[in-house]
Length: 131
Image (cartoon, rainbow, N blue to C red; front, side, top):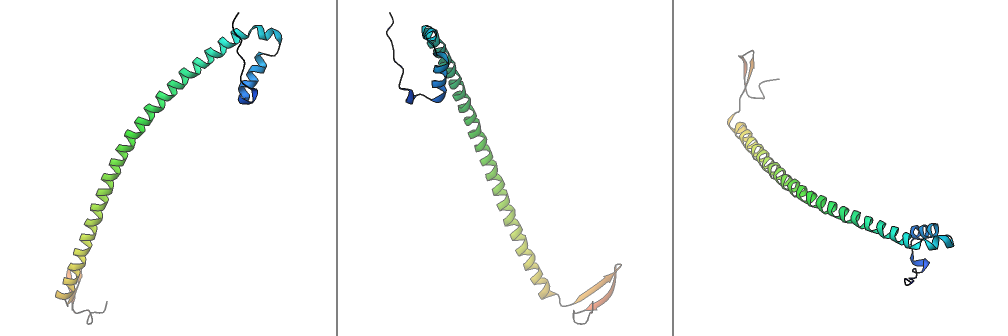
């Protein structure tokens, strides 16, 4: 005769396990079917373990893909940031050149000319020319 194994205390079982046991072992006749119920539970546990292994492998694969994608995106953001920094430096440089050029224009030019349809209409300094 097989040795009897006792179940763990009911308080340690989850609600779903205790419900399943109550449904499967409700009568004395059900108790005679206990070995087949154990086999069924073991099969379900094996199925769950295989599914868990599969999910774990899938998760590892997805995490590896995400890490690779994240590294590529991080690299691209670095490139974009570098180009934006270069563009900002270029704009600042152009602005300072333009400001410098305008200062030179102000110093060198004290006269104003107005052209209409390609013909010079008026020449003088800004105080003499009323716009």
